[in-house]
Length: 204
Image 1 (cartoon, rainbow, N blue to C red):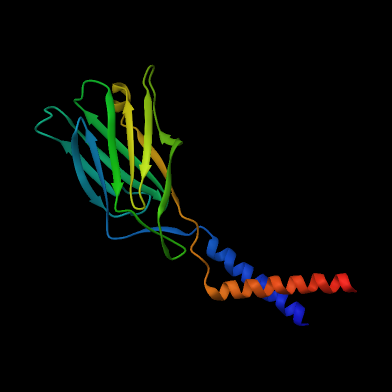
Image 2 (image 1 turned 90 degrees about the vertical axis):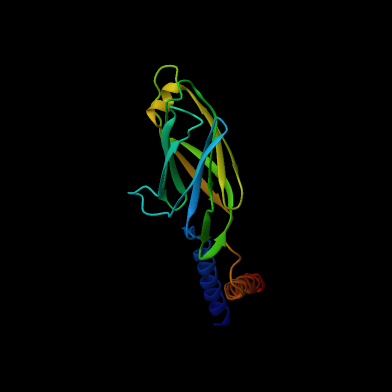
């Protein structure tokens, strides 16, 4: 009977541990920001709050008196808790866009109720809205990240810039927080029970 109880405790502990390691990531914090650098001029930062997938979280207008005729916008929308769409259109450039750089910063996330840092970012080409005409190209994006931000550097042909593509990025996070001591105790008891049961079976 004791062994059975220990095994049941182990199962309960393992279930609790599994529940804690389930991916439940949430973007939190007051605001996050986005900026875009073109030809050495930085637009923004523009601030927003992550909302639902049906509405844009940030839209910023691009214009600079030092770059006459240049106008456009950058828009950011979190389509779910760990995937974000970045759209920008730049008009009046008159040539290919070379090494444009955008940065999303102030990104605060929780994983299973605990603060979690960014550990990587992937460009999701398959989920991006890219309409390539003949000869149009996208180079990059070369991605870098910190615990609360990520930057993409990319180049696009002029025709692709005019299409105003939406680029999807998937954010990666640190592993789940360390389980609470109670869960570890239950798991340990269960493993001990299993070990005793196996030993008893061998001696019979």
